Image 1 (cartoon, rainbow, N blue to C red):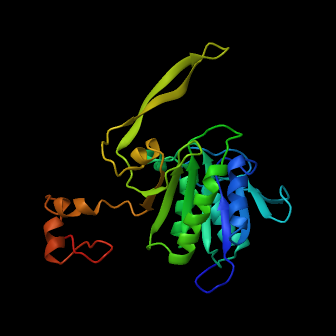
Image 2: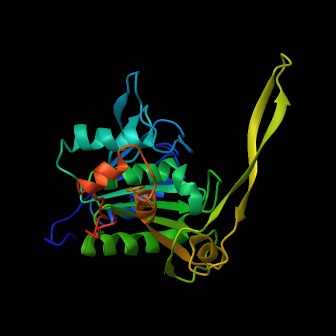
Amino acid sequence: MTKHGTKPTILVVNDDGITATGIKNLMEVMQELGNVVVVAPDSPQSGMGHAITIGKPIRFDKVDLYGGVEMYKCSGTPVDCVKLAVNKIFKGKKPDLCVSGINHGLNNSINVLYSGTMSAAVEGAIEKIPSIGFSLDDFAADADFSHTKKYIKNICEQVLANGLPAGTLLNVNFPKGEHLKGVKVCRQANAKWMEEFDERTDPYKRPYYWLTGVFENFDKGEDTDVWALEHGYVSVVPVQFDLTAHHAIQALNSWDFIGGRDAKAAGNKVSAPDGLNLG
């Protein structure tokens, strides 16, 4: 229930496609909480990040995959799905919650930047909708999501009851397996993919490349999402879409830019979102 006691309206999106097992499981949990509308890509869109469709039409069709659920498939990206839902289904009247997933595969650490799952949730937050992205450490098409459901319901209930800080959404990741220790609020780990491009040859003797790599964690902290997942916890990381490096503004203001001294003399200051002057 929302703060006003009414049944919430919930937008469900993903990046694995409308027929994915993950979105079916997420939809089932959301039906226990409110009125559900599902909008998802008509095919897998993993790794699309915050891409949007420009320069070609987007197809957007109602489908009947599961009885009694309002569902639409979209030829565009996960972000397109959210934009179309807000503009064409809800017509500007925002849903109470936007949930994305459940993704087949983790979106912890730096993966949040590449993730279509998380970008859909980010778009929801940009639209000022409380938003959450959910991911499971299992790439299998028939992955078992049953152990995630009670945690997803609890996390969504908390967001509906308490809201989220402005400009913030949640990135939630689940380890594989039934024996979860609970929820741990974390920071994003300092980790990245050590990438390689495997060079191969097609039947016409032309080279092509297949991206491979190993995920390396440089962060030894025990307060990160990587640590939590490795130790059997559900990781919850608050994420923001303001990419300004506020801590760097003061240093840059000391540089000798053309016209920079005049701007400072005119009182050109930059402030952090909380009002703290950084100029």
